[in-house]
Length: 509
Image (cartoon, rainbow, N blue to C red; front, top):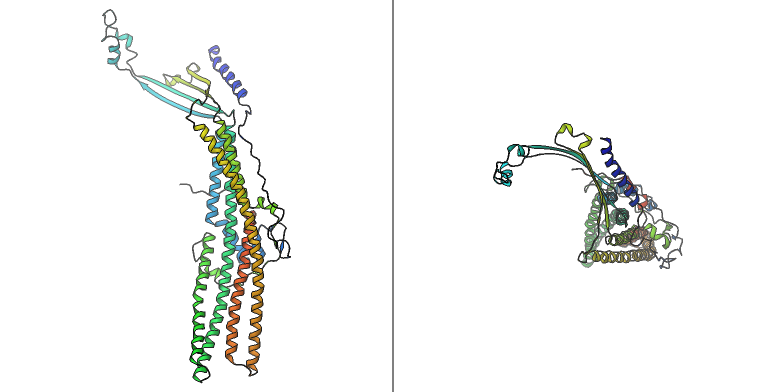
């Protein structure tokens, strides 16, 4: 019994040695990925960058929105980064990519399956007798029933066993597949970071637009009150014969235009509050109680840290995502090349088989099967070559996409710097216009008090000052929006968000 039972173990040892001999590192076909040079300039193209105290070339603060000094904005930003649904979807896509990478890694590991079965079989008597000439032997004599009795009775067959298979990665197809899946997962991570940068810019922009709409509404309401007083005074002068009908019509037209400016500002404020609610993962109206009370626009933060062009590639998530995409496409070439080479699979089977369940555990009822199988592609109708051409074309496209991402980043930064410089200059002119209008109103008050002017001049100057303040508010808003766009172009902000490695809560049906 022992002598016969040792044969399976000797064969298993031989198979094990074969596995150890063939499961070495092998070779990995296809080009190895090397990060492409970003070819970034040493300085920004915009001449105003770094030449004024308002802009410095140190690395930007990841939580750049704190420069505005507004705790409400800071709270909204934290809520949006935690609960925004677009970012949540991006996080779910990261989980998908990591699961795909894990599945790809499993393709290079042995597979083991367990099986158990029961079969009952019976041969038909008529079929057996027909085989032997209608129930007689070759000499015409009747075939004895005892010879076929065991075959015509039902038979039970019990079987349990294990099946194993292992496709050896001799030419690196699995390894390149794992590399490709890992790069694709990294691209998903960078896409989420890019979504965070976009989200942070949207929250800051919408919040600033809300505060600007509220400030503009307050100024417009003051202008409307001044226009109403002017109309009342003009109508009184008309009744006294000191003004003609044209003056009354002009005053009424000014009041009508001032009143017409109020509803759009109210609508802008309401839409901004709804947008902020959705950006933070809440239904419209959820933030009205918190945001209805007006707050002043933040001051222009000075100085602004924008960093050097050389650091742009490591901060901009879209550039990092493009690099990961190029990595995945390069690994895909290796996968396509490895398909031209043989596949070697080791298979094995071991189990117990018996006609009686009570005898199933007996060693004499064991069976096994071991052996390698090799598959070599001979003719695929050009499919493999087409796959290789496709992989190389995808890698070429990914390389161009990386270069395009770098160029877009440089353009965004230079456009942002140029816009900020121009809008800051315009804001200075707007502030000077407000100062001039304020001085004129003060002088009109003095002249009216001293009896050298009339009330109409005061009201006219009040309306002029209100219009100048509205222009100045819009100018201040535009400067702040330029700052938001500049920090978004710099790729900052995702570093301050929760780590995507903490996982994502998935819906389990």
